[in-house]
Image 1 (tube, rainbow, N blue to C red):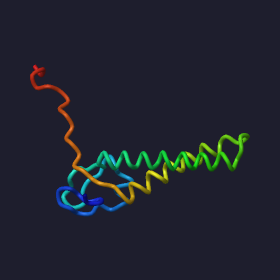
Image 2 (tube, helix red, strand yellow; image 1 turned 120 degrees about the horizontal axis):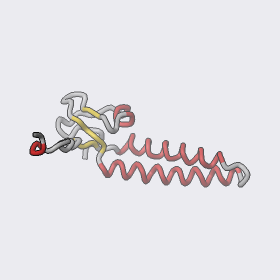
Image 3 (cartoon, rainbow, N blue to C red; image 1 turned 90 degrees about the vertical axis):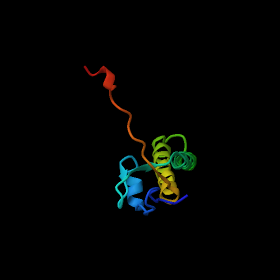
Length: 109
């Protein structure tokens, strides 16, 4: 498993592109349409949810029951940082499948 490498030409894709263009990612050398693999997405989501839960618990313990905004902001920032760091370190790329045909040629008359 190559880390951030195009599966067709094995060129490393910059980390900034992987984090900012996960849905519209193209290889810099062969221009293949790429996306994050499903295990990378799931691992990033699990890490983000875990980090968000920990940040919520820490912020809730620090702020008490009267301030409800700080734990929510902490959870959102924890999710963003947790999933971003995992995708930064452990992202794997696959070739994006082609979109299905929008209409059937038999129905065009």
